[in-house]
Image (cartoon, rainbow, N blue to C red; front, side, top):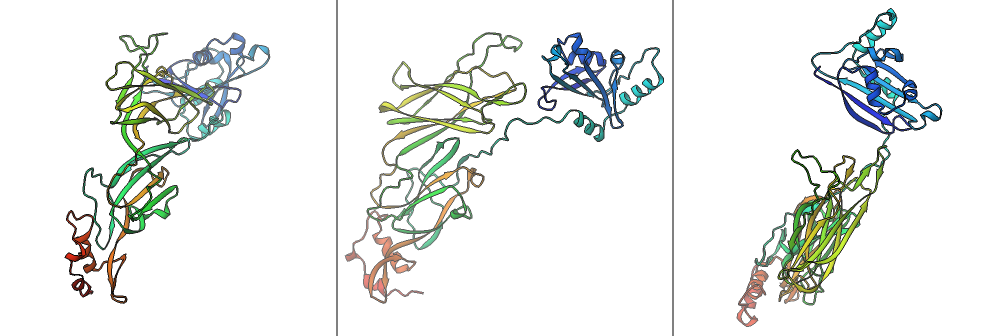
Length: 481
């Protein structure tokens, strides 16, 4: 015997409500299968079983006195059903088992004892020896309805991992001349914000020295107006511009991506040692300098849920302890213990933010307090997604007005994963010679004479030239194509 028999069992009043699976050795008799499928059943309960063999030709109920003599061949389906009848069967109510014999090599046929009728032999030969096709499967589904999902479908969840815009710390501020489409560098690093179960990303981009005329905002080749759940705030770079409100303080985010675990002890064979407590596996990370507060983001990539024996979803809870200490300190200080309870099949996030007693560089330690899960019916995988260093100061400290674009983007089916570059069409606003009024006026222009004057007098020029040092009359006579 080289194969096995795959058993699908359902224990519920409704036969199709919850099927379980087990593997039984190939070659077992119907008597053995019934005993294995109904462990601990009383003789009266076994006597109430109805056993049927099903193929594409039909189905036939097998009498109990034949169970010890019949061994299903591969492909034959066996249906066992216990019909509750009286107080003695109320503990079982309804048990359904579907067996699909799966094996290779030596096949077992039905074995019959003396005295059996030719009709019974014919039934056994036909039903046990013929594989089940689509028709047989339909018969099985008629006897045992397919499992009915008692849980809702998982909702779609999305996350944003970053942008393709350049990051250029301590780089030069762009100086736009004329009209051009630009994918601006970051003015400050983007960071994540968790609202409920959903992720938002805030970003701040520097388009250059102001003032600029900013139009036709896009992500990649798609207009920003075509996306839902995108907030945008523009500053042209005029003197007296207010700070952007979508990015009001400094937040430096460090991506971590480590799973928080509390493994159970195991013996040399890898088996879990019963009643032994899990082992603490703390994870430590350090904030940036001069931090006034911190924020941790936890990710549950496969949801947080457990299923009972009937396949119904139930809420599950994990506990995570947060501690802190200055990098120069020895003792850890408790912050809080997060108790996160959910009944979610989809990925989601949680965020916790707190303030430090004093500003400085702090260490943050997270410890999973919930023991490792060894059940396939429970999902509670928890990851420390990110640590944020928070400072209350405005993220920019620059002496000249800057053209800025601040965005707050919700992760949706439209915007997820690594986002394409944010870009915009920008035109330089500067003093431009107006031939009608014969004066220099401030407006968006591509006039080379005006841009020449801008290059001489721009705030980007470390040695700007005064009006007295520029031949303004010659620039006014500059021919314009």
